[in-house]
Each structure stands twice: as structure tokens, then as C-alpha cells.
Length: 210
Image (tube, rainbow, N blue to C red; front, side):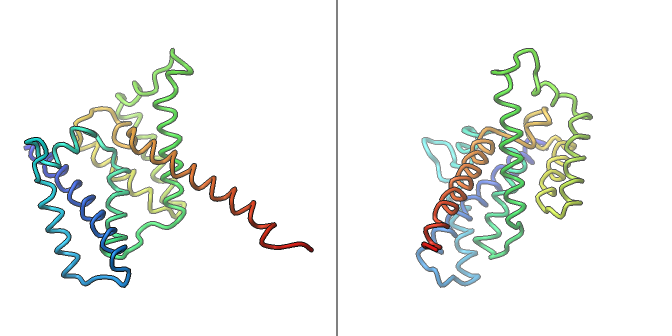
């Protein structure tokens, strides 16, 4: 039963991501927008693509063999992106996105880089203490939601998934961070930093001489 639930979970995630990608491409080709019927048609196409065999293996299964344990925040970002391009609903504001990129960058750096700095401390091992990890994640979720960040709901979803053993991993940290989410967060924060530098550099030039 649990294996069937995992398969359904993975298939749905791949379909949503494919659907969002197709919708984003369609919007570039038709900036004026498209009807609800066409949106549903894109969903049907995405569902079909998820089962296209690549080397005898369905696309959804090949995707998760490449990345077998995606974190809940990463999957949540995919759902939010799907809502934005398919339903035209902005569920997250700029502060939510920034908070998620910061969380991914900091959590991933601590988890994946600390062995190079402190070999006598194993932060990943603490994730096996699920009660302690759940308390930390719960506190972060409460702080985020109390601060008006909807992004905190992704931590709540991670806690719920942890309680249901929804993913293959038994380590709590794998529910909130994964290498792809970490690298994506570093890239987005880097792009934001470079954009801020460019805007700051162009401001005096735009103002002109006194």
C-alpha cells in the first residue's frame, strides 16, 4: 500500500512539473493567454509525457531514479510554479520566495559542506533523531507563519510527510532539503545579489551629473 502511494506521489509530481513547463512555453508563444480548455489539454499532454518510455523506462520513473528523494519544499515550489503559470495564481509573494531560497542555501550548506570543515560533527546524523528534528522544523514553521510567510506551510507539509513516512528516506533532513534544492537556492540568491549590484551601479549613471 505504501509503495503504491509513493508511486502515485512521484507520478503526480512529475506531471505537475511537466504541466508547468508546457504552460510556461505556451505563454511565451501566446503571451495574450489561453483558455481553460487549453490549460486542461496541456495537463493531458503532460500526463501522457510522464509515461513516455525512455530506454524502456517511463519518464516519471527515470526522473526519480535520477533524483529519488526530492524534499517537500522543492516539490512545493513546483506546485506554486504550476499555480502561477497554469492557474495564474500567485500563492507566494517575494518575501516567501526569498525566505525559501535563504532556507535552502543555509540548510544545504550546513548539511552538505560541514563535513569539509568539522569532520567530528555529523549534522546529518541528527536527522535520525526524528523527535528533535521535528521540534526544530516545527519551531521554524511557527516562526515563518507567525511572520506572515506562507512558505512556512511547506515546512508543515514536510512535517506531515515525515509523520506519514511519505518518502523513502527515514532521515528528517531529507524531507526539507536535497542537493538540487540547495544548488537552486544558491543560484537564485547569487542571481539576486548580482542584480542588486547592477542596479546599484546603474543608479548614479541614470541620475546624471548634478
